[in-house]
Length: 100
Image (cartoon, one colour):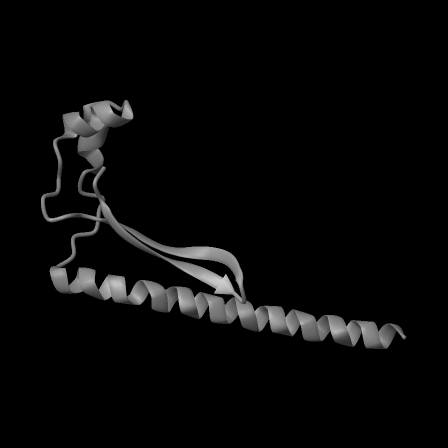
């Protein structure tokens, strides 16, 4: 549909665990012709017209901020996932020691 977005990968160690996705941002020339989108996706134009404004309108400064924040968000998620993995490892170690 021509909407803008950004994405960043979430890694824990060398493993890819997920992705932070920011989307639904209207480009400067939004909205496109409803008939064009309707034909592209096989939907009635009336349905498209109802939802053309269900997007985020951001200034250029806000768009730049989103781009810079996408990786920071992914890094925070990766940090949380890494800490969780470490904690689970410690708990499993405690369980194993108590079984002996």
